[in-house]
Image (cartoon, rainbow, N blue to C red; front, side, top):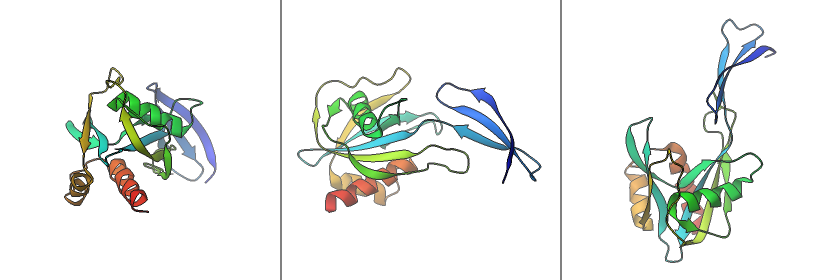
Length: 172
């Protein structure tokens, strides 16, 4: 479809809302423009998963999920994954192994979420999360991660996908 007009209707800092009018369509399409995201599934030398317990305001509840966040302008996704892991958990790794990416919601958004596996994660200090994040590191074994997935206790769809991809990579 041919775009007739595009306009920004709201700028929230880390995302913008735009409307796009298309030829032959009565009502405009609303889009969310935002940077790419990352999720880092970290596993320490003992095979324990390093995750975060995080308050998610959209559902007014805590979730357990991999560390993750926004990719800063000019930052490589792998670097962002290692940075987010350090900030949210206090653990660090040297290599972020790519597990692919996906469009979180291509109906409304143009960004991608990149998934990484960080093997041999090591605790290097206290978490240093952003001021608006309510996070705490959670370390658990593979069996507990698999049970959470099997029982539907992973509330975040991208977290579930990241964990399933990481488990598959660990089995290869």
